[in-house]
Amino acid sequence: MDANQNNDPTKKTYHKKATGKALETVEKHSQDHELKLFGSCFCPFVQRVWISLEMKGLDYQYIELEDLQKGEALLPSDPKLRAHSRLWSDHVNRHIVPGFYRYLQAQDEKSQIEHGEELKEQISKLVDAADKSGPFFLGDKMTFVDVQMAPWVIRLRKVLQPYRGWPEPESGTRWAAWVNAIEQANAVRATTSTDVLYRESYQRYAENRPNTSQVQQAINSGRGLP
Image (cartoon, rainbow, N blue to C red; front, side, top):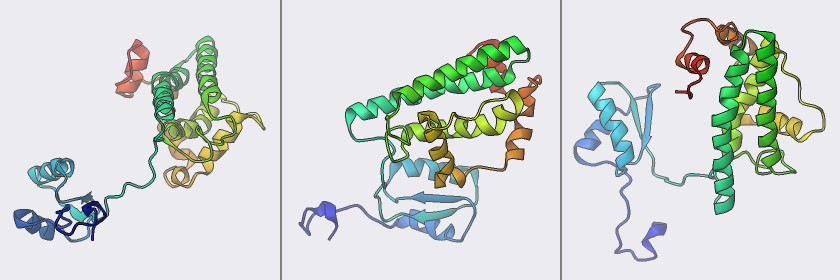
């Protein structure tokens, strides 16, 4: 008996397999393919994506999920910690990400020093807001703010260090513990490319070449990031 039937076998629960025309479509797209749609047959949000794939005529593999358990949440259940996480995630996106690009795109020494100090200041604010023991933002597990910050931690060393001389974290500091924890996290290591990819990909930003990207243009014009 399904758990959400509350021990009453007469209560209906969700279907775990498509029916009708949807089943025909599932069977048509049952072969292995690099583009995979994981979904539940009754879910309206999955159906949005599914409709789009069918409208575009794309080939894909449909994989029905029977277990709807979401796993461990990245945001804490405690309302105060949840708000705290959202606040500092916003800080990453509003201050640290633009600060990274301003520093990298600055061409004269004075601007580089100015933007480098601004970026360090914004990172210090984030570190001060983190759990004191760590090593991650909220403690011993990687959560939402860590995920938001992780790509930029990686790029501090792989991009800003070779192009702008970004310093190594000072040994024994809270910042050093956080950087090390993020860099050693399995999910981060599994999604990080070799140093040369980042160095070559960001050379155009370091030289502030015209028409590099919408991000570069927004930074140069003082607008918010797209």
